[in-house]
Length: 237
Ligand SMILES: [Zn+2]
Image 1 (spheres, rainbow, N blue to C red):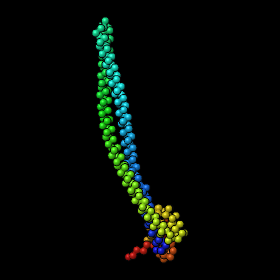
Image 2: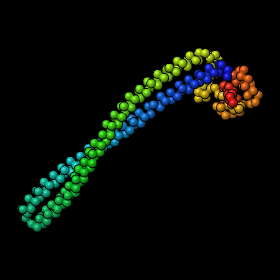
Image 3: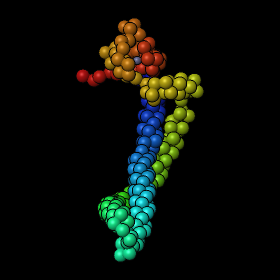
Image 4: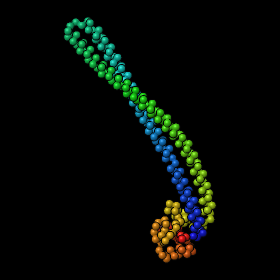
């Protein structure tokens, strides 16, 4: 392998590592985002439960008021019954009292149902609040973990970047420009080994004449298919 190419292989190794760490860094907040989403979904659920409970309590108090008023009205009608003048009036009062009793029974049933629903909602609210408390703890812990992991990766990336710059200084500017162009267009893999006339990066054949030239190792050649810088891999048998 040409010496300038072996420097590029080193440079590529460092660049690929930097790429890997940058990718890791970009993926790091994914878990935190998932936790944050779960937390806000549960908070929205809690708000929904609280609103429902408030509606139930308002309705219960309305029905209780109605029940109280209607019970009063019934008592008055019952009192009137002691002083009725004729049978028609008596029948009318009796009918009124029966109707009030009937609708008050419906009101009492509704109050019981609303109480049951309120109790169930309170239990759900307590449960949801516990989940939110646990979620909040987990999210905060993940935030701390993330900050540490990011700082750790930043350190590694900074070290590698220094090393990369040192290595890059040893490469001719023209070759370095070619390397950078290929690196951007070939996902960081610029230098490829060729064995048995096949480019290891794109798996295409190198024409025989070019392969012979490559084996002589006199200058840097590029793969005719993927344009990567190639070298002959000589397997020792
Ligand atoms: Zn190729």
